[in-house]
Amino acid sequence: MYTIHHTAHVHDVDLNNRMSPGSVMRLLHICADTQMRADSPSLEAVRDMGIAMIMNRLTMHFLKPIDRGDELEVSTWPCEASGFVLPRNYEIKRDGELITQAESTWALVDLATRKLLRSDSVDLSHYVYGERQEFRYDTVPRGAELEDAGTFPVLYEFCDLNRHMNNTRYLDMLCDFVPGIEDRTLKRLTIHYRNEAPFGSTIRVQRGCTDDTFFFRTSIDGKANVDAVLVF
Image 1 (cartoon, rainbow, N blue to C red):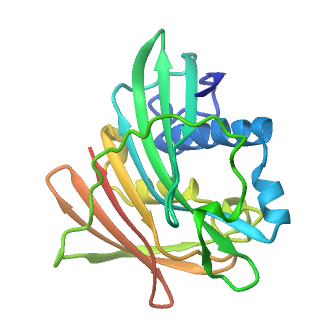
Image 2: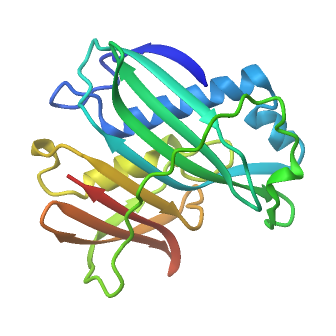
């Protein structure tokens, strides 16, 4: 387990003075990136091999809200990989109390051919591994009625070095398409990343809901982008 400390500050919080879901997600990834830099190889080192490490799925459970000024312990650990899947777990604690849990799965992609590579294509043996904690993940129900909710432009501010929308920015986008988001508290989410959203493209957003659960399916020029479920 690798741990960093963070104080929730003004740029982390939303209009209710609580850490936004997107900010929480970015904090988890900061922790993972810091661990990879410390233990080697870093994401940049993997990329220098001609390989990208791409997130496939993320599940997060928000057990307690995080307020501005809260002192946080943020931890992550990679888990034993198999086949084409690289799992990773995360947790956030406040005063020793567990307040956020998450699991992600990653894949290795050859940058030249765009083909998936086996998880052992990169030597990650220097990482300190931990036991995998698998969480329930939600899926968009088969036959769910989805309506067009609008479009979202993939601008410079949302993109990373892969020249597509960073995976943490999708949660910000999806929250913007939840009616009355300012009066809701997110309990858990699952995002399944299917295809990238390149810089300069436009994402079409479709939405459905049942009680306090919102289903999303996004696409670019008819090609699947992400499926997501947000439970409030």
